Length: 107
Image (cartoon, rainbow, N blue to C red; front, side, top):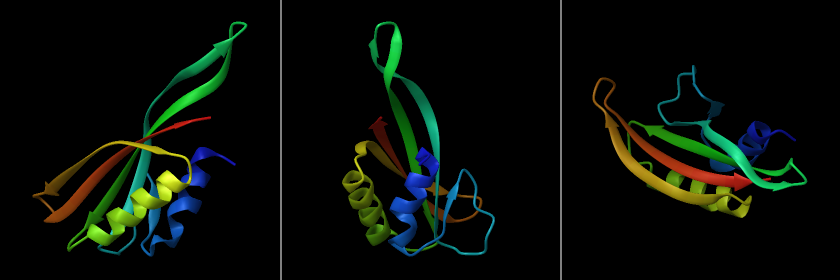
């Protein structure tokens, strides 16, 4: 299974739409994600044995997204991801709250 499919499967039961990179639907609360970095995590005999993936999951909402953010963190950690950081943002142009949560995953 690809990493993108794994993330979608992990987050699809949160109850809001989940999309890779951009969301084009009409929901006012949704999740997007993307990989912002990747590098070799383990090499043996000059070959990459494991890869480190760094994923950002963004929760977008016009209202309180606290429970959705908590579910995202719990589900991603249960799937083997490690949370590395998170930040609260507000998109002034669209008046949308935005939580950016970063995770790492080695496979």
